[in-house]
Length: 394
Image (cartoon, rainbow, N blue to C red; front, side, top):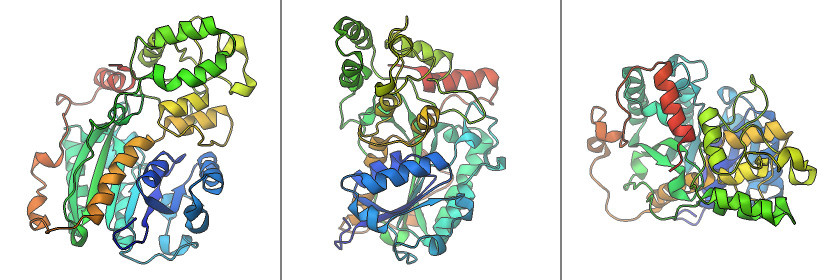
């Protein structure tokens, strides 16, 4: 809740299947609108807003909007709540990552999928008290093109009256997610609301391993076959967290658990990554469970690896549901950042020095991240970096 007793409110663009929405809700934000273009993800959001325990406020006040965010006008399309310029607590979004993915063409601002301009236009229109943007860590690469674009984003926010608290790479496994998933987060707070901001502590939660996260569901899937369950568990507990789940593209085939090195990492965890298993109720033992490299994961198990609550519901066929999971922002990470933003917005005490003196575009400390070695992108470099992000298990 806000310091005045009113709920902290949020609008989320590119909401996907709701990973960010779950996390921000856990941090105390109540959703005024969830904007998403994918029809299956839209139905997932509607399903959970309608049925989820504890989401009574959203059932009354939240619009789930199935639309292109470039066409979204909050003062026209939001009908359940009254939107007043300057009163929204948080504008958040995981804008599309292909423009900045190391595995892509690194077109950045030249990529038609780049939605940073749309996000910044919404900031100017809504004047929210805070802004959170999530992207792949590739946006923080030290390539000249990317650094220039980061500076443009920071300058635009600063000119719009915001303190840019910086970009930071947060690793999902540090927040109780059993997966290696580094994400770049940008936080900005409106200058008149700024009392300071501190990034969430990455040491608060213990490491959750794949063996721990999936033990209950695997035991249930194997049923009376205790020997096969023990074989899986004995293998899984030799590892720690999973490689990065990838949602893939509609242009490509069915769902699987990533590139070749990621699949090898899954084998080390006792899981066959060559596909996705049928749901428990539709299990085909020989196909889904009794494979030489171990069982395949169900969509529900992939969602656990991604940090979703076990009772979060997904709409669509198996591949559509898996892609929603694989493209999600882990809820525990969103919650951790949301709690830090909520604390900043509700903080009392003396105002820190002039925000203009805090934000310096030329100061690399604005981007507190361990950069990968400076190198122009190429196929070999892309493979090395993407495999490290997707397949490394520590």
